[in-house]
Image (cartoon, rainbow over all chains, first blue to last red; front, top):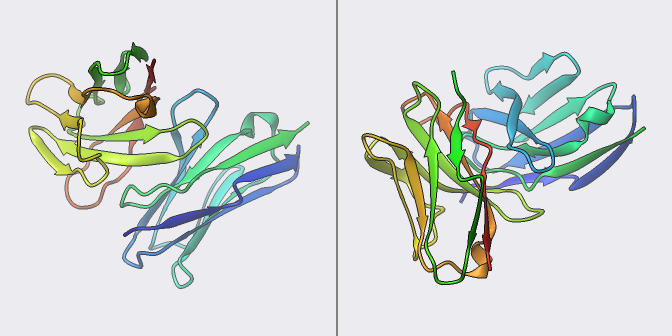
Length: 107
Length: 116
């Protein structure tokens, strides 16, 4: 079946530094990769997504890169702020989610 | 445009009772997805429905769980004879696109089911 692996499971970053979360997938036919942010006790919210026709997409401090050959994609958050603390999930178009990364920003 | 509406937000049931979770998709969306999230775990896909049709139920437990999305009214996730292991947050999401590609999904606030 479909498999999306996400690493690391927890990540602590000093405020202002960058955070990188990586996901790998098994289905080479996948073309759409969203990232969701879930704050404690709240709903997952789409923060950025990428389609297979591009290798990188950026939205202010958030960027996603995609390597179709290696079948992995990454979330990059620069200049991290306390409000970035949350659990981040990657997913593919088959509705398979990664196991999540708990990101903690240390003031 | 109201977002995806789920109710109730919290539901408490005793073992053996039935739980009914409701989800109204965003206006204009005709595709609904249900997910289960156990405490401290990720989202697990359960079922994908369009109006009056179940498209993909590969994530649904074989027994006690059912889902529907009638022509009129919200989508319903029904859990019969609940057990403690059913305690979780159940999220509904909706999307506007048809076809094989399940695209951008908008999540509801979830229903937190507690089974005593």
